[in-house]
Image (cartoon, rainbow, N blue to C red; front, side):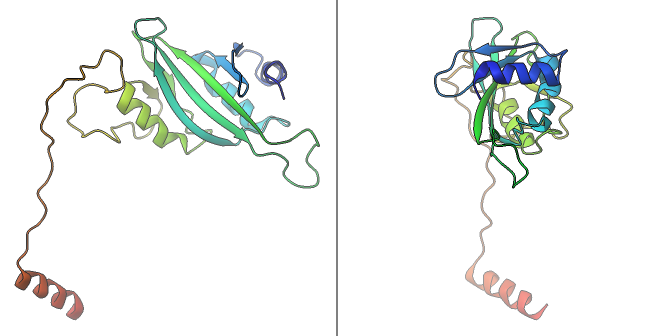
Amino acid sequence: MDTQALLDRIREAAPEARAEAGAATDQPTLYVTREALEDVCLSLRDAPGLRFDFLVDITAVDWFPRDPRFEIVYHLASLGSRGAGAPASNVAQRLRLKVRVPGADPRAPTVAAVWPAAAWAEREVFDLFGIVFDGHGDLRRILMPDDWDGHPLRKDYPVQIRKAAKTEQPLQLSPEQFAANVRGEREG
């Protein structure tokens, strides 16, 4: 299915959603507003003939100093026909969905209710770019230490930062203590 056909299907399934085609050479690319993101994602997942039920990845791009500064990029896949009753046109396809997000208000709704796997990827985007996903149930750092300042994939992030890592020291046991622990586990 080409980009225009996908765009028509989305407009049919979610008429109030604003969507537009984006330039792409490898797979169809669509832009949607962040206000329409949830409706469009539900339509992409549930509409017959679309069935983009596999969220491959979520990432972001920082276009600093341009505004809108960020783009959240969703890579989706429809895995094709689901049995003998599926329409012949329902073949495997891929889609790139993008959402522009202003730098002054880096927020977007979560899509974890549509694709539960989005929760981890949204945490990664939050951690590295500082984009907040409204409605996310557990939005906290996932890659950087909890006490890290800033978001390292932003273009204005200071790359020459010097910060000692806060790591815990490994537990040091003598051979006798180790043997006593092993004996205690066997007996207990």
